[in-house]
Length: 158
View (cartoon, rainbow, N blue to C red):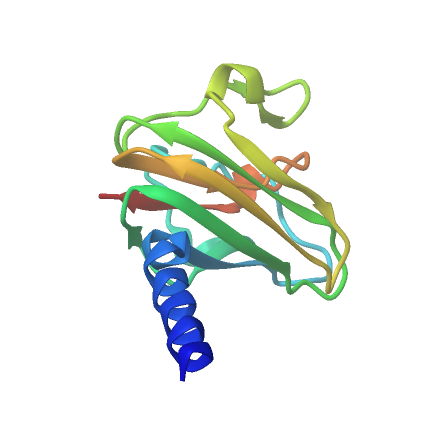
């Protein structure tokens, strides 16, 4: 009987001590339409683009999460292209990220990059865990041409 009570006490203590109850996990898919994609469109954040014309994108399973430890489980669902995911804070949806046209990519240092899941080959996955405060964040791919092809989304942390 003492053993049963001890096991039950340990299980109860573990239940209340587990930090996973406060964590959020966001499933992220990196996608593209394949083939010869037009990446000349200017579909970056704040550019008033018709996102239905995007040839690449990032899809998340939830648009908002609670503040705290957030894990991004990222999968490159493309059949052909390498992609990555970078997280940066933004003030609002009208922000235009600092863009280096010569490199055809966002200036990560100037954008406030908080972390990334680096280059993933088709079918590969990775994860990133960050402690996020309330605010708006952009998830984007910064492989040359991908961001301007529409490969970004936002997530709100409350």
